[in-house]
Length: 66
Ligand SMILES: [Zn+2]
Image (cartoon, rainbow, N blue to C red; front, side, top):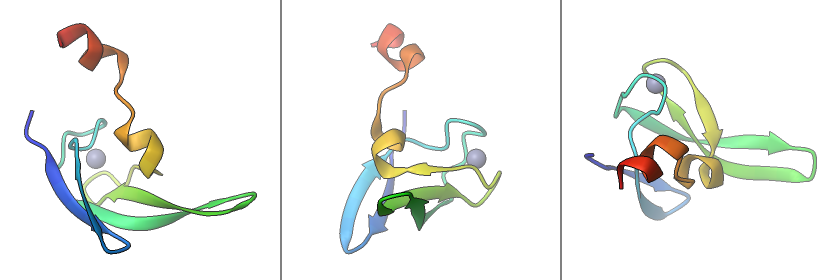
């Protein structure tokens, strides 16, 4: 899988493409939580978004393929 480099708050992360549409046009954002804000990633293709920590978490199908 080709990883996408994205600069979030001055740090470059290599992340997987959008798990929903496979898009690699990702945007950094902020996710509002009850106890503050967290860096997040948004997909500019399908507008899905997730906190960075969740986006980086491997999903079950990736583990099965590894
Ligand atoms: Zn998407």
